[in-house]
Image (cartoon, rainbow, N blue to C red; front, side, top):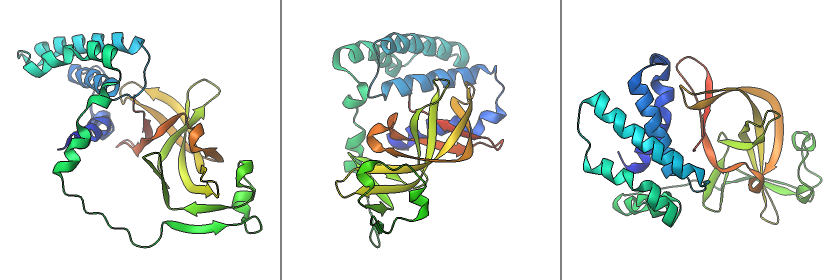
Length: 245
């Protein structure tokens, strides 16, 4: 697997097999610690306290590795010890990664049939679907509905999950994109079906959510996290949203 594929696999692994693993399983604890390390390393923005947390997680990871697998540490484990110091001196480690270099070693064939613009909506043509929502004022003079949009290098399209804000309990609030709108000034607005957050599961390292009938509109620039999130259903039928960090 490529580094990008391994990163995705690590993120969804808990949802693939988590319902089959006991809560007190030591190997599962080791996996969760490893995942914490990966998420901190790949985080683009963080607080100084994260450096201390990363150092503690790496120390615990190495300790459990020796105990659980009855093996000695390898050179790559020694490299991990230097992650906190590099982070404090050079900033986010993801900016030093060589993930993009892998693209030069892969063949990429991409084809797109048809236009990605589905519908242009003027001030006299807006359907009740949009009139019933509080669209930003800048969209009152018309907008375009798109199948997808790439905003500052990030892809947004129907069906993706995004963090739309904070709920009354100061927890994250999520939404599933139902439409992508762009006005004549290039401002991007997302129509989202709101997800109700039930609880955070330490075992799955994700938020348990349920779909609601509530629909909101939000500008891409107002998202709590600009990166789309992983939204999927586990084997037990529950729906989860996984954060990047």
